[in-house]
Image (cartoon, rainbow, N blue to C red; front, top):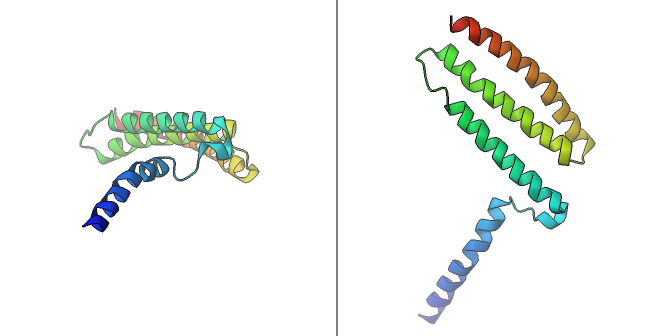
Amino acid sequence: MRFILSLTAFILLSSPVNAQEHQQHGVPSAVYGSGFTIFRQAMDASMEKMMDDMHAPGYTGNPDVDFLAMMIPHHQGAVEMARLVLIYGRDPVTRKFAEGIVAGQQTEIESMKRRLEILRK
């Protein structure tokens, strides 16, 4: 019985630690410095905004319109996330990926906006 109580206490006490590590994807802020906390908060806010914006238009019943209306904020979210990496990231290869995302996604966003305008007429 004592073993079961000890095991239960261990599991219950270690759960908050595991949850915190999972929230931070196992990477403590100390590894990257205080900038990581700012980056993480900005990234979380960016993703939350992207999800809200993707759901905001609702469904029209036209799959083409609905797809474009949701993909535009999805791509805008990718651009925002890439910009955050350009501010806080250090790896030159990752920064190149981010630069490509900013350039490519912005072009696609403009194309999707134009097509969406045509489809909504």
